[in-house]
Length: 219
Image 1 (tube, helix red, strand yellow):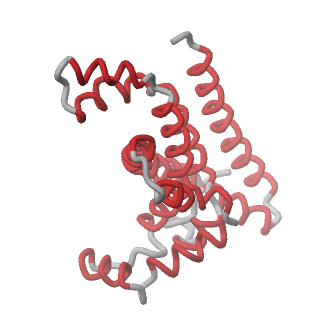
Image 2 (image 1 turned 90 degrees about the vertical axis):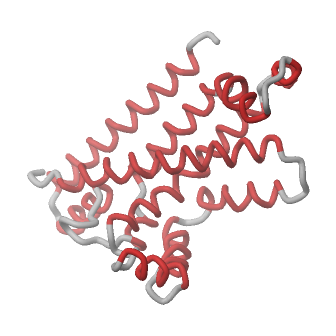
C-alpha cells in the first residue's frame, strides 16, 4: 500500500465525526435519561435506527435528505457555494450519523445509573441544574460515556455503506480506507487490501482494549 491518503482521510473524518457525535450524543442522552415522556422512546428509536438499518439504506436516506435537490442540500450549497454530497463534509455527516447511536445508548445508560440521591444532594447544596449535570452527573457517568465515544469512533472509522453513498468514491478526495480496501479487492490488489484491512483491524483492537481497560478500573 503506497497511497496512505485513504487512511489519513479516514482518521480526519472519524475524529471530526466523533467530536460532533460526542457533543450531540451526550446532550441527547442526558435529555433522554431525564425526560420522562411518551415521546422519549420514539426519539431513542429514531436515534438508534442507524444501528439496525443496512448501511446502504441509511446512505440512501442521507443522500435523499442532503442531495442537491433537497431543501437542506440547497441551503448548504447557497451558504458554502458547493454541494454537501460527494465531499469530505458529506463523509463526516455520514460517519457522524453512524457513530451517534453508539454514543447515545452508552451515555444514556451511564447517566441513568447515576445515583439520583447524589444529584439531589447537589441541588440541596444550591447547585443549579446545569451545574449538577456538569459537576456531578456527567463526571460520575464519564466511564460509560467514554466507552460510547470510543465505540462511536471505531464505527465512524470503519463506516463503508453510508459513506460511499453520501461521499462517493473519489480517489484523493473522498475515498476512505474501508472504500479503498473494497476497491483493492475488486481490482485484485491483494497487497493493498490486506494492508488496509490489517490497519483497520489494529485500530479496532486498540479501541476495544481501551474500552476494556476503562471498565476494568475500580470506580
